[in-house]
Structures are given as structure tokens and as C-alpha cells.
Amino acid sequence: MSLMCIRLERARDPDGSVGHANDCYEFIAPLTREGRIDLDFWEEAAPYCTLRRCREDGSVRLGALSRTDRGEWAFSYRSGGDDNDYVYRFASHTFAPGEYLTITQNDETDHVYRVASITRPLVFGA
Image (cartoon, rainbow, N blue to C red; front, side):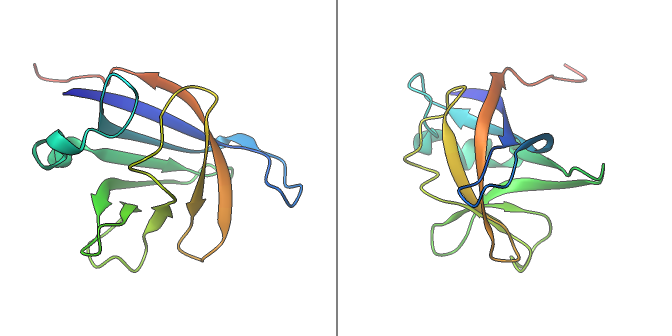
């Protein structure tokens, strides 16, 4: 298993909205060598899969990568799931710089994000 830090930055949406590097998600996830979510190690890695959500206005929310009872992948900010941002086709997506994915935010709007970087996460206290 390789835990990786993935940074997604807002891309230009089909409606013409301009992307913004400060509108981003940074999260930790287990990836296979092919760049897909490592489902075999998800349960073991889940406690380490943290999330930092940054917005253009400078606000930051902390959360975690999670799976719902229905098997959907989400960025969750508190238990209960009423504030989740859902990632379309998350488990089948290949995470590589330059790839795009759609996130349905908790207000039910879809936005396109681009994989900006994939790095090894920082480890403190090791």
C-alpha cells in the first residue's frame, strides 16, 4: 500500500466558470502503482485518509475521505453525511497529474477538478 497526498484544483467548468488553484482539495488515499484507489487496503488506511478543503475566499475545512453505507466515495466534514461532497467514479478513476474528475458538492452543484499533484504525505512524530 502506498499512501499518497493528492491535490485537486478547480478546473474550468463546462458552463465557462474559470478554474482557480486556491479552490482545492488535498487528501490522503491509498493508491496502487497504476494510480487507482487501492481497495484491498482501504479499510486499513481509512484512519489516515484525512482531507483539507480550501476555498477561494481563504476558508479551510478539515475532514476525511470516506465511504457511505451505499458504497459511494465522499469527502466528509462531520459524521452523518449531510455535508458530504461526492466524487463521481472515484474508485475507477486513475489519479495522475492532469487528469480530471467531477465532484458533486453538498449544495448539489457539480464542479470539475484537475489532479494538480501527487506526493508522499508528510509524517510527523515518526
